[in-house]
Image (cartoon, rainbow, N blue to C red; front, side):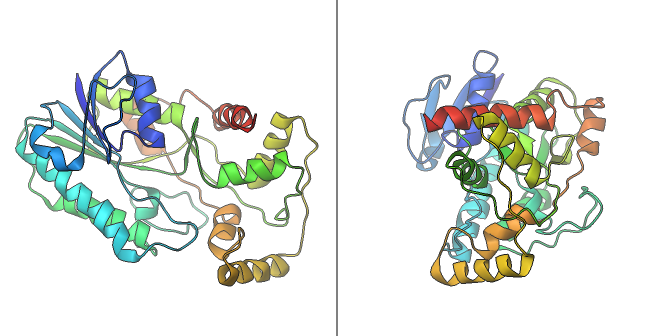
Amino acid sequence: MNLLISGIHGFVGTNLVGSFAGSFRISGIDIGTEWQEGVTSMYTWDQQENWPAVEVIIHLAGKAHDMGKTARADEYFEVNLGLTRKIFDHFLSSGATTFIFFSSVKAVTDTVAEAALTEDAIAAPATPYGQSKHAAERYILDRPLPAGKKVYILRPCMIHGPGNKGNLNLLFTLVSKGIPYPLGAFENRRSFTSIGNLAWILRQILEQDIAPGIYHIADDEPLPTNTLIHMMAECLGRKERIWNIPKPWIRGLARTGDVLHLTLNSERLKKLTESYVVSNDKIKAALGVEKLPITAIDGMRLTLENLKTDLR
């Protein structure tokens, strides 16, 4: 099977190539055409006329959520909506039969109530990132689909694995330096997606007759942030240091961080302390499985071991 993957040099793209090389013939699209092991040919977004004939297009490219809030709102739409329009229009006129778009659970909502987030939730994204991803979804869903073509919209929650960047790296670095975690007073549960489970799900979609549609992607079990700190300390052979500083003090510090552009700001505090539980029942039902192959704990341990190696 021939695959064309956009954003192939990114974190998810690099890991998928590592999982799929040898099973599929992979071509890539990215800003540059640097050689990448496991990829047979590379193209830029300006070389559309040269993009190869393939059976499957996987659209990963996009502008990630900006924790520092320095990006303009229109930048998200230029990339997340603009690139989706370009590659989906190409799909519609090409011989490819399957289009897989990597959206995000943030295309639905930035806050999850008590119940786990399902595909039935009414979309009401609050940030330019989520709004641009939702707009990209609507563009895909509003286009007439020719006979013989099928579309999957995947909404993963936070993906982690080798080469991971973001809040996990920040937390791991703090723990590695023996710096106490000051947010122990906040009790939360968050869903994550290990890159191993994501690659496995994607392979099933490619190799089985799975119904097209919208699917949320998450590991089976959500994890509290305090549990993550414990796992990080255990991985590093350190004693965990968790401080239960009063929440009002922390929120005040985060507001100061908004003004002074400190590491801890309101956006990062929300990411670290809010609960955000995502249901993966629909994708498991479509795949005919009760459990994904990698538990949330085991997947996180693999990521932490890679982070530990990167520190050396």
